[in-house]
Image 1 (cartoon, rainbow, N blue to C red):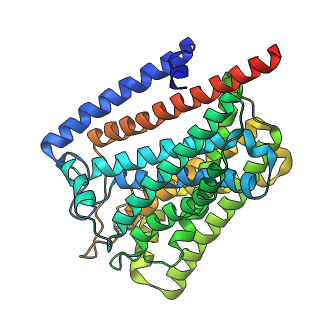
Image 2: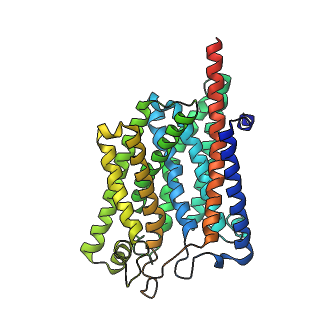
Image 3: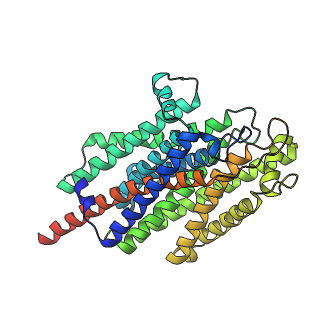
Length: 390
C-alpha cells in the first residue's frame, strides 16, 4: 500500500518538498548542536528543560487523541466515528515519533539513548515513559495498518485487532499519565508537585488532540476526496469543549490552592507567568493570550449555533489548540523552574538553532502523517471506484 504515497497532485508534491527542506535545515542545525553541545541552545544550569521537552510534553497529549475517537467507536458503537478512527490512529503514530525525536535531540548525544536500552532503570519514570510510548506507537501502527490493509481487500479486520484496540485505550491514558509523573514526582519543583498533574495533562490532551484531528478532517474534506460527516465533527467538537472546560477548572484549582494556602514556591511560579517577578516577564503576554484563547474557544464551542458554523468552529478549535500549546508546552514547563534553588528567576530564550531543530522534528512528523493519510485516501478512493464499477 505504501506505493500509493508516490502518486499525487502538484500540491501534494509541493508539500512534500517543503517538508523535506525543513527536515534538511533541521538536520543541519542538529549537526551543529551535536558538534558544539547543548551550549548552543538557550538552556542553562537553572532551566534544564527547554522547548525540546516542552514540545515532547505537548505532543504526548496529541498522541493520546486517538483514544477519544476509539472509545466512542469501539466501546459505544458510535458509527459516525468509524471513518475517522484510522486518522486518529495514524495521527497518534506521527505524534509519538515526534515525541521520541524530541527526547533524542534533548539528550545531546545519540549514544545516551542506548543507555536507556542497555542499562534500564525501572526506578526511573523516564524509562517507563519511553516504554509506554514505544508500545503505543506499535499498537497504533499495527492496528491502523492492518485495518487499512483489510479494507483495501474488502474484508473485515481480524478479531485480534479489536483485542489490540481494547489494549490501546488504557495504554493511551497511561502514556500521558506517566509523562505527568515525570513532573509530579520532582519534590524540588513546587509548581509541578501536585496530585492533579495527571488530570491536567489528560484534560488538555483530550482537548488539543481532538481539536487538531477535527481541523485535519476539515482540511482533508476541503482538498481531497476524504469526507467526514457533520455528526462526527460535531460530536468530537463537544468532547473538545468539555475537556477544555475541565482543563481550565483544574488550572483554577491550582491557583486557589497556591494563593489561599500562601505556598511561596507555588505562588512564585503563577506570579511569574501572569504578572512577572522583579521585571522578569517574558511569558506574561503569552500566558494571558492563552487564557483569552481558552475562554474564547470554550465560549464558541458550547454555543450550538456557533459551533455548527464551520468557520467559527475552525477558529474555536484553533483557539483551544493554541491555548493548550501555550499553557502546557510553555507555561507549565518553564514556569516550573521559577524560582531556582537560590530563589531567583532565570528566564529562558530559545536559540535559533533550537527553533530550527524543532521545526525539523515537526516536519518529520508532518511528513509521516502526510504519507499515511495519502495511503488512507488512496485506498478509500480505490474502494469507492470498485463499488461504482459494480
